[in-house]
Structure formats: structure tokens, C-alpha cells
Length: 70
Image 1 (tube, rainbow, N blue to C red):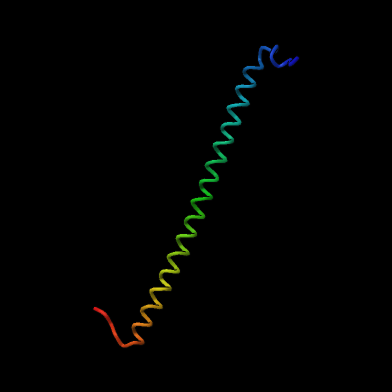
Image 2: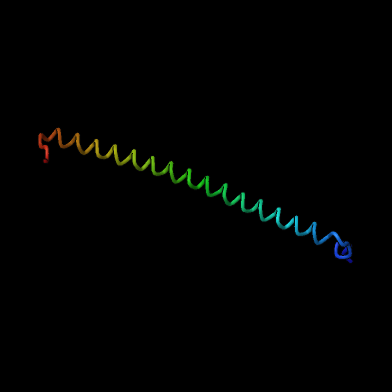
């Protein structure tokens, strides 16, 4: 037999425990979302750097060929 059911204050303690658990879970999800945003930002920065490098390489090839499109 569980004595927590017989205790008059057990409902308050259980409610507090559930609310605290839900708050902690929400905090964890928000933290994970922030980390994901950082990872997305880093991947965007890397993609932009790769695109800029490819553009510079293309421009150099065009300059070497002696043709400048207008």
C-alpha cells in the first residue's frame, strides 16, 4: 500500500513535482533549440564562405581568359 495516497499534502507535493519537471523539460527544449540555431548559423556561414570562394574562383578564370562580361 502506498502511504503517499493517504497523506493530505501529497497532492500539493506531487503537483509541485510535476510542474517543476515540466519547467525543466521546457528549459531543455529551449536550450536545444538555441544550440540548433547556432549550428544552423555556423552552417550558413560555411556555405556563404564556400559560395564566395567559388565566385572568386570563377572571376579569376574569367580574368585569365581575358573576357569580362558586362
